Every structure is written in C-alpha cells, then in structure tokens.
Length: 378
Image 1 (cartoon, rainbow, N blue to C red):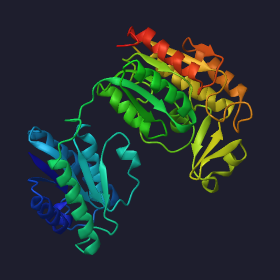
Image 2: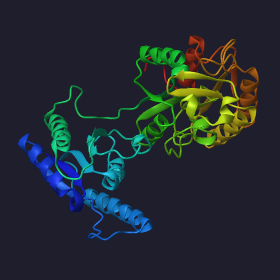
Image 3: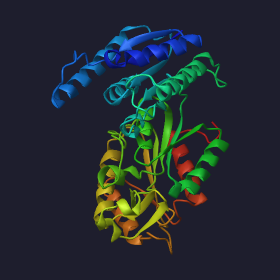
Image 4: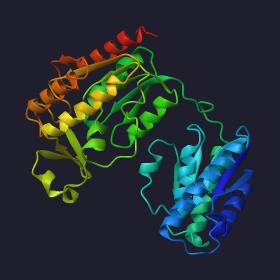
C-alpha cells in the first residue's frame, strides 16, 4: 500500500522532497505524480496559463487512472496558488471514499471546489517558496496526518457509502429536521444530513449520483435562492434533478429568504427589505414575491423531470424559524405565492403547521414511506 504525492515538481521540488522524506521516516511508502505546467521558465500569458493548468489537470487524472488503484491508500498533494488549484481539481475527480490531503498556501477560497469532496486542508501560512521554519512545520504536520491515516485502522472499517435517506437542513429548519431524523432513525433508517447553505447541496447532489441514497427528503431547498436569486454558492448543476431516480419528499424550508453575509457587506438594496442577523457573519433577507415565484417555477420544472415518485408538502404556517407570527420575515403572502405557483407544475399537499413542527416532520416521514413502498421498520 502506498501514498500518491501530487506536486508541481518544476517549482516545488525542495518542498516535495522534504515531505517525501518526512512521510518515509514515518513508514509511509510514496509514489509521485507531477502536476507541473512544464513552462520551462517562460512567462505565459494568462490565457496560456489557464490552458496549461487544464492540460496539467487532465494529464494527472489520466496518469492516475492508468495505474492500479488497489495498492493506493490515500492521496497527498502540495501546491501554491497555481499548483494548489490544479491539485484540487485532480483530488475532486477521485473516488469519494479515498482519503485526500492538500498542503497549500490557500491563496483562494476552497469552498467552491471542495464542497462535494472530503479533503483535509493543511495551510502552510507562509508561501511555498523554499524551506524555512514555518513551511517545515507545516510539511511536518502534513506528514504526520498522512502517516496517521496510512497506518490507522479506522473504528468503522473501510469507508463505504451504504444507502441512507438523504436530508437537507439549515439552522432555521433545524427543529423540524431534528424531529424528522429522530423519527427516521427510530424506524431503523440510516440518515445523512446535508447543510443546504450553498455548499452542502453540492455534496447532496454528488451523493445522489453515486448511489449513496435509497431515498431523499429535500426538507430545505434553500439553495433555490442561493443559485437563482442571490448569495454565494458552489457550482451544483443537478441540485434539484440529480435525485430524480429516487423516491423524494420536498418541503419549502428556507425558500423565503436570501442568505447574505455581514450587514456592512450587503448591497444597499437588501437593507431596505425585512432582514435579521442569523449570526455575526450571516444575514437573512426576505425574498420578494417575484423571487419566490421564480424559485417555485424552477423547482416545479425540475420535479416534473423525476422518474421516481415525488411528493410535496407545504406547511402554510411558515417556511423558516423567523417566518411565523411575530417573526422578522414572516409573510403569508410569500407562502401562498410559492405554493400556488408550484402547484401549477405538480400536485402538492398544504399543511396547517410550521416547517419546524414535529407534525410536519412526521408527515414527511409517513409520506416518504408511502411512496417508497418501504415499511417504517425496514
């Protein structure tokens, strides 16, 4: 069993050699894959550089794919700005269950790339421009992490993706999804919950595609507003269609607001709408009627493409924690607009309660069992 090291050897040879020696000293056999641009010292134009990065990524993926995977325990990558981005693309292409470690100066926001991948990040703090006390310490830590993973016998055994029920959640729908998960687990189901904050949905989508779910409850399709109205989000094509082959329950958790950052960083137009601080870093801004209608049309179109049974429940008492009488973004009008528009695409059931009521969670579980032909105590 070996560890594969990805590195831009034409610019990071010294650092790569140090990391190889550190891992070898810990009893980790290392094989290598060069993800260099091979520019030969030339100063490329931005266009040529981007093309070269794509070629380096494709070359590495092809090289890795050509070698047997059975003798490979994990992947470790080292890179600065350019090399780190190439490495991330290569790591993203690898099997979900394979352990991955990236050692990088992190001069970019990695969330958009690693949203659907499990990658351990080791920031080097100082730039990878030769060895010094700071970079040696970071490389030593990376070697220790790699050695620990290489030699470890994990308590649960080899990583697997046994089919579970996939659920989407946010803090504002947490009481509802907590009750739902408690019910599903009491019925002896495994449940995998994804944070629908603009990044977790990317993993939710990938898991649906690779067979990790037997059914899904999209309790919180808040990423409708992230992807199609405003807010940051990872690229997640198929967020509302990739699970079309699975029995699916859909509720409107979080479709009534836009997830923004700190108030001081919000565009002025959003300050004029009802909003509240969800935390010191996040602000929730109420959607307009036109925005929820747009989201309902997008969701409805996606649901009509499904090949497996779909049920939609709309709790008319509120779609999020602050969408209730006295709440900061309470609006019966928005709820009605969303439900009425979605109903033009697909039949739905209106409930009297709130998204966070236990009765709503139980209704979702009961409806899923009905459409999946699965007994509650499977």
